[in-house]
Image (cartoon, rainbow, N blue to C red; front, side, top):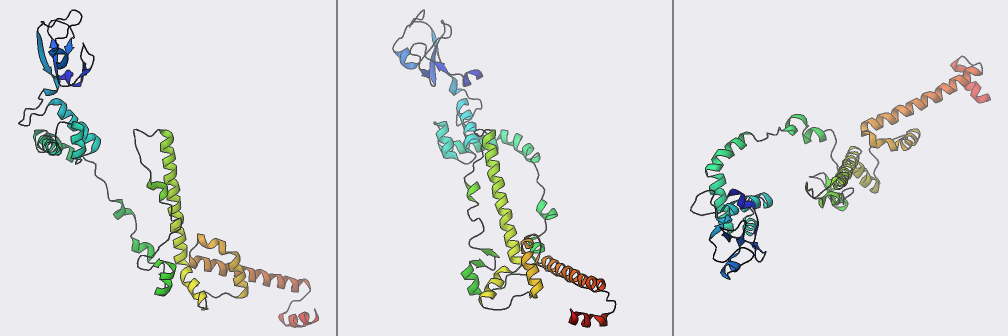
Length: 310
């Protein structure tokens, strides 16, 4: 009888699917009739309309006796509907069952599989075996304060910040770099059943592209804050001196090394410019001393006379 729950039956006479109640001939082997053909007295082959028969309803077998009288097929459709539509979507589950309302489906599931004997036997064990996730952020990642406290905030006038679209309290801009980057992943829908290997690889490639744009966005914001580019921009517009002053030689060196500032902090870049300029000054001085030595000069007091004659 349990196997009949998953078996489809066809009327031997009209060949239509039999839904619900069917008439089974006791004398003929594997002979079933729908109610319409049985009421018309259908006869075919060795079957006669005076043969003994019995009514069979495979969908009315009660696997669990209850006042609601849910059939085995209805219970199966209830569980399949919850698996397909998710817990709580009772309207869709009701349409999937077709013979029960949303309230009846909710009450049956809660009373049978949650609060009933099945729920008491399965929920506690499943709750104890659930996966427990460790809080990695608390133990391994530094706090936001530890990340940003070494970088001075952007110090600009409120009117300038509104003109630039800068929000000081959030340290953010209205329009970010690659502002449309989220469109790469906003429409992605991962499905383990519909996606093949190629679809999965393409979606992972889109996620990698999005992560790369986020990294570039964070890098640009870090450089902007570290070098105080915003405040320098408005300071230059108001003809105010820059925060950092260079001599003519240092300014030339700084211009040539500017491409490296994205890989360094402001302090590291200033130190690099200073050291490179110091190296160039020492090389220039060493070249002068070697030229003096080559011309036979050995004392410092001889240098002014040599330069005058030269």
